[in-house]
Length: 155
Image (cartoon, rainbow, N blue to C red; front, top):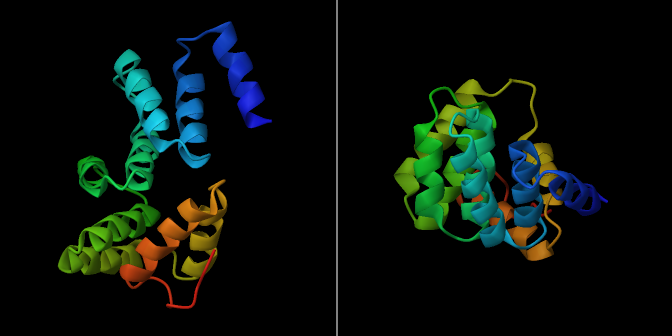
């Protein structure tokens, strides 16, 4: 349904940046993260003053492509990221084997997150965005490697 709506929006106006950003997210989370990243980069070129939260989608596309360095670069640009971004940054660092950086991101996540939040719930909800089970497991694997999840947690 989302793809049909996206097709319609882009048919009406192929340069509508909001529709392009949505499409990039859809492509990334339906198993085509490289295509999603390409669409997002084109959208950001049309509107270089997009809010920071749109760039999260590009970082997630890179994560799904296993291009953790590029994802880390995007996360590092943020001036005041929301707490969950530190968890995603920790997953990137953990996948790279940068365990000190992953631990630092996890510590910042725990300092900034709402005290009554449930990370296992967040991680499972994040994984459910993925159409492909292997992409969902990839996020869970990164969170486990960062020490955010118990080893037995799954999507």
